[in-house]
Image (cartoon, rainbow, N blue to C red; front, side, top):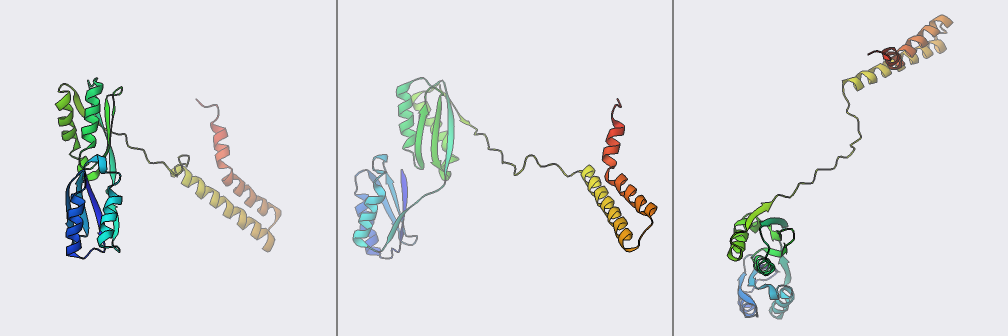
Amino acid sequence: MKRVFILKGLDCPNCSAKIEKEVGELGGVASSTVNLMNQTLTVQAGTSVATSLLDTVTTIVHSHEPDVEVSEKTEPAVTKVYLLKGLDCPNCSAKIEKEVGELDGVTSSTVNLMNQTLTVQAGTSVAASLLDTVTTIVHSHEPDVEVSEKQLEATAPVKKDEKAAVYNDEDKKRTIRLAVGAVVYAIGMALTVFAKLPTLAELAFLIVAYVILGWDGTADKSGEGEI
């Protein structure tokens, strides 16, 4: 498994060489490479030392460069689910789970024998080519098992307001009608107060406003009973 550590502030070539050597000599570590320009330490190590590797690397780095900040570089993980059609051997399942879990970039590997699935958490850099590698591992134990990738259903975006009405042409017409009716009513009231309109003229304005504002109700009632 490849692990990349950021050594922020490392600028000493001699110290870099010592860090690279000491980390490379750790049990379970296959290789150790310091890139002084990028201030990184790349380590190839087995899963047995994975959990404690950051603490060990930090101790080694600080023994040479106490002011260097040590952190692990991580990449976004994705979940891949593979269908293992025909898999029914518990022993083979355990071997497949272990070997896939030891691949570079893979953080977890779980076989569900009942569902005949393999769920893998892996970095985005290796996820695209993982199917071929998984297939090779599975067929090395169970040649007749069919391996395919299960397409995870995308989560539909949640609408902000699913109950919001669509503002169509009918809504626009209703809005305009209500605005016109309100304006007619307001003009009638203003003329009544300031121009002292006769009662009949005032009544005419009110009737017009009423007809405009209540047009939907009148239209709906007239349409009742029609087939």
